Length: 297
Image (cartoon, rainbow, N blue to C red; front, side, top):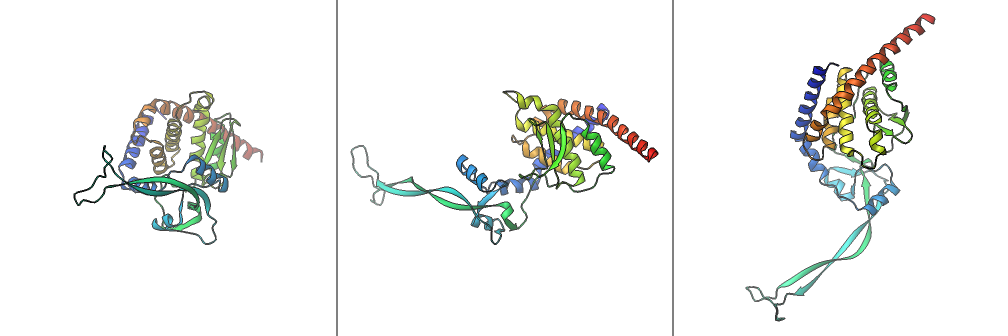
């Protein structure tokens, strides 16, 4: 992809991300997410110990208020919730006399204090059904022309091995820097597989040093870079992944602006162009090998 074409695609990316920030869909998503409590470190551990693949948890009535019902037979996840009590005491002045209001009644000060912790039960999103929840980055569905050749050509752009596996956290793929391998969910559609492979390739090529350093690049910045590269390369391949990539980048832009994306544009453009150039060479090699196999068959 030429330099000017890359700049044009990156402009589309920036406009797309801005559009998500300004959309009513994003506002609905934020309103929905605001209904979930933030759990303490200890309760998070309790949740993970009981249901490792938990993503969003809430109480029975909280789910009901959001238009979803806990499925029959589902087992609750036990967490600890604080129980508070209140006490009242008369307010006194500096001389120890009771302070009264305009009606002559004693002014009382109410104090709230922690009494104990009690077991309560929450349920994960996967344990409920009902009204669809607003979401960002809904999974991509669709086919990819010459999928096997495209996959093999991309696979050759990294020193990391690539395999399919089961993702327990709902992710579409991951880059394991220690094992030096990329794992793709076996549940992905062909379109999701190719987009995710490019994303994880970008991590392997760009961020392996960040992972090893004591002061690595912020994870949000790494994710924005990887997904932006995936968008540019996918555009080159003729794959429509805009809706997914725009949403994904917005979800990792915690400052709710495009500043992080704009700051990374130089890195994104350089790496995307390098991957595209290498991909073209690898794809020509794949096609040549296929023709050779056909002739010898």
